[in-house]
Image (tube, rainbow, N blue to C red; front, top):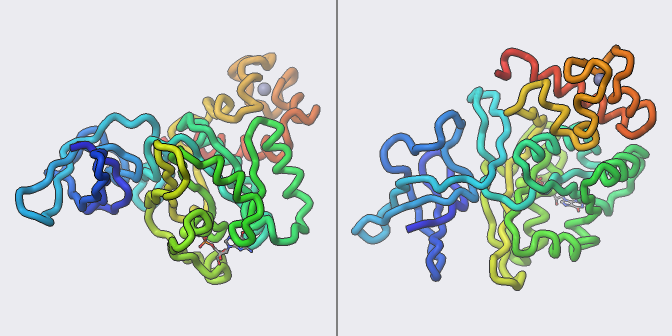
Length: 314
Ligand SMILES: Nc1nc2c(ncn2[C@@H]2O[C@H](COP(=O)(O)OP(=O)(O)OP(=O)(O)O)[C@@H](O)[C@H]2O)c(=O)[nH]1
Ligand SMILES: [Mg+2]
Ligand SMILES: [Zn+2]
């Protein structure tokens, strides 16, 4: 049988059969290793399609025999495991969730997450939740507009008041999306708002970013019922990420993974060997001076490139 992984940790996974009935089974991986998952912190992520078989005994745990090729996958670098950790697979869209306040707006997180979205080659949308809270940070609108200018869709919504939720519904309908964002921005709340009666645990905000408690601890896929259409609507909730470190590319390649930088790659006087910091005739620095590249994006570029160039990230 073929099925989709909805959730699971290291050993036991919930797999939803692709048969008509869509039944869910608890499965474990047959043998020790699954082919094609070497090098990752965890073998499977929500959204993965697997081939599995059921034992002859009723209610016995099913066995996962193999992994179907991934269309795409999203990872974060797991510091503890020193390996990329799979957050989601085979998604149509990444929803980068941020807030104007509580927790404070963190555009640098967005810059980093957007790079990983470009690496995964998945459409990425910025969702600014908690838009019901008063915005006293002038950076918020300025940056949101700039993200929009460079080509990202930006939604301003509130899971609490329902403001903007119709647009959010339309966006996710009939697709498979993954929510990505820092702890406390309301990822689980957004799913709860889509599904009346569904209650993924939400956390009290002060507990979270003060003490670093994460309410959601593993990725899990939720099917959103009642959306109409026939492909089904799926959203993957992920644990809050404090700091996102893009990985999977070299520092030199970063320029291709930031949208407004990419068209300028190789155009500097010193071509691809330009470091974009001091050289005359640097098209990137000219673009920053001309406002074509936002100063903060340039700053993020330099920081991310530094990290990618550190030997520990090889
Ligand atoms: N004012 C306001 N509060 C919200 C909104 N959405 C969520 N919250 C609150 O923000 C807090 C955190 O929400 P969660 O949904 O647990 O956040 P999360 O992103 O899932 O957090 P982790 O699971 O730790 O990654 C909860 O107390 C929510 O009730 C909103 O639109 N406006
Ligand atoms: Mg959560
Ligand atoms: Zn340059």
